[in-house]
Amino acid sequence: RDQPAEAAAQLPLPPICGDASADHGGASMQEHIDMMAANADPAHAALLQTMEPMHSDMMRGMTPTDFQTAFVCSMIPHHQGAVAMARVAQQYANDPWIKMFAQEIITTQQVEIRQMQAWLARLPAQ
Image (cartoon, rainbow, N blue to C red; front, side):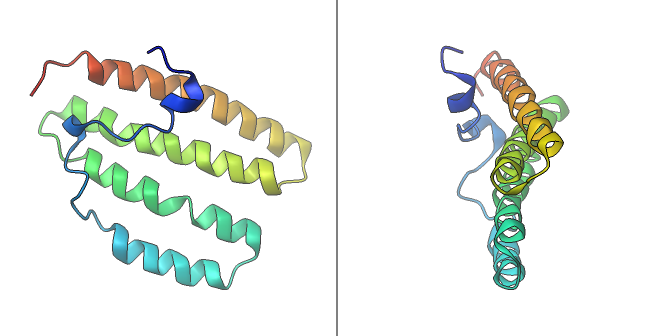
C-alpha cells in the first residue's frame, strides 16, 4: 500500500495466485508472438510483445480454487497488460487523443491494480 502506483503495477503476482514456475502456455505463445513480431513494423512488434506476459499470468491467476481469488488474480495481469499496451501507444501513436487515452488507461489501471493487490493482501494466509 505504501508503494507508488507505478511500482505496485509492476509487482509479480503473489503466491496465492498460483505457481509462478508452472508453464501456462507462455513458451509456445511467445514463439508465435516472436514470429509475428519479426514481420511487423516496430510499433506492432512492441504491442505484440505485451501479450505473452499478460496471457500466461492471467492463466496462472485462474488456478486458485476460490472463484473470487481467481478473478482478482487474473484481472491483475490483465490490467498490467493494459498498462504495457498503453505505454506502447504513448511511444508510437501520433494522434493526441490516443496518447491522452493511453495515459488515462495507465492512471486508472494502476489504481485498480493497487486495489486488487490490497484485496489479496487481506485474505487469510493459505
